[in-house]
Amino acid sequence: MLKKINETLSFLSEQTAIKPKVGIILGTGLGDLVNDIDVQQTIDYKSIPNFPVSTVEGHRGQLVFGSLGGKELVAMQGRFHYYEGYSMRANIIRKNPAKNIGNLGTIGCNA
Image (tube, rainbow, N blue to C red; front, side, top):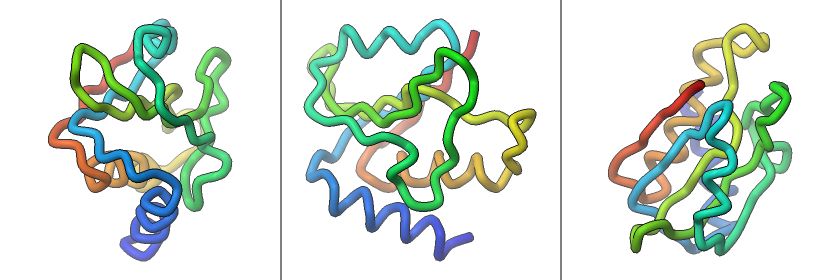
């Protein structure tokens, strides 16, 4: 598991120099919050090694780097769910990269 997390982190650090202070996991109904973010960069989940892909309708499936209210952040536009067939360990992979690319805290939201 640690090897996969490190591969994911390595990929993300190669793709962006942005070091967000906050992470937001956007659930159903809140994906449009990205319209209020000053977006600097997006990365599709499907391009990130070892990263689950959201299959729920309306979950875009991308990391959105930018700022909101003067704070640099990364928003996960789309979540993963146990009922989609992902293990609880797969959910750890999504949280650890967000934590380790620079943010001090993560906010999770759902419908």
